[in-house]
Length: 279
Image 1 (cartoon, rainbow, N blue to C red):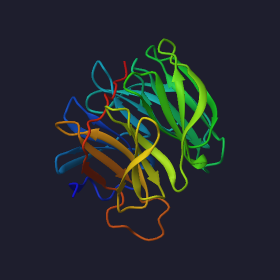
Image 2 (image 1 turned 30 degrees about the vertical axis):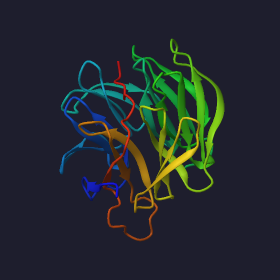
Image 3 (image 1 turned 90 degrees about the horizontal axis):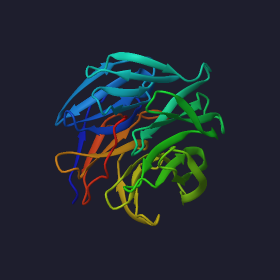
Image 4 (image 1 turned 120 degrees about the horizontal axis):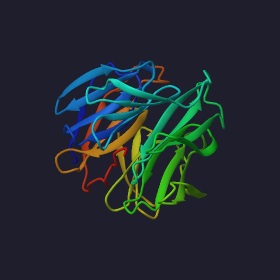
């Protein structure tokens, strides 16, 4: 039987945006609407409050971190203290959601309406010179940006449509090409995603209680039963990069679930693809 262990703070409400922080050998993830960054080292965890909303956090190549807050981006130091803010939107009905960093070190994050309306958001790119571009408009609930190991294809979930899209990527400009449906889910909603070294896609399925593993062709090859209805993101990490960490949420659950809000660590038979730092 595959080894599974529950980790992290059980009081987390809406865990999201996980990544393995190589600089400290730990998992980092956010509790979005409480504005907290959580750090898990082995069986120990700590919480750092950073803002009203903490949507995505990733490492910076020169040290410290980059984060998406409610309506923009910020650079943080090694202690998670803000150094510089980059505003994006002034719409109080929207907040930033999920995202990721491409092989050239650019951060892509989409925002969404608080009421989760269809086509209520926009996908943005924070460039390495700290300028911001619109990549795709509109989107609904943007989730799970990951790139193939060769950097030529990006995968992006728009959750309400139950679809994961594939885009050819211009490696110089970071522009996305034509949108192609790569995976259509028949049940549940695609949320955060991780890419393995073989080009396989691991998808946290909101309202599905699973992480589904698709091969490079988009064929379902494995299912991990999480035991919590709303898994939200997954990230490879651990000493050999073969542990899949799965964040979860208490949101939209009428009855309490024992491990909702915690992180499930699962040993899998493949290592993750490189997770890039913001340049």
